[in-house]
Image (cartoon, rainbow, N blue to C red):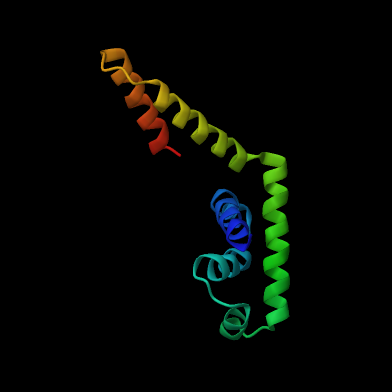
Length: 111
């Protein structure tokens, strides 16, 4: 369960990090991407562990709120699913199938 939450927050962070303040970005990066503890972050920035915890929890809620409104992550997941389904369907070796596979590859490269 914790890994699922961490993975989801990491994806949401990737999509919405530009909407966060510098401090929110730093704390989220240190906590989720660099795997520092709340205490380690607090010590590094001279604040209480509770302050870091509150900031991280508020930021998680903001990321979930952005996703609820903008749905960038869920749309991305759906596109990935569709591309995978199309790749399974296109099995021919003719020029049209090769062209479709090239387009699907281009789509995946832009995700």
